[in-house]
Image (cartoon, rainbow, N blue to C red; front, side, top):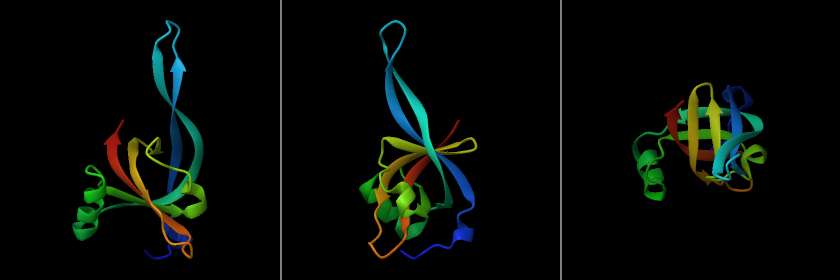
Length: 111
């Protein structure tokens, strides 16, 4: 993994976390609540990178690169939203301690 430059982080993403609520009739409801925003780089995965990622999580196809401090606590209970695109997090690839970037492997769906 290599460090990414600030100018590469050109996509503004909403960070959302799944929350459970009780509806008016006592039923369980799942909602997504915004917990923050971040700048990131969205890139499709290809070739060997995609093959290796799919061994860990079958449906991932997109890599989102951001700063480590912004994505440190994210896991599959979060999702990222960019315009009409929803990125469901498959796993977060923790970079070594000396790098500032983090790679979030996601599957993409549309609203």
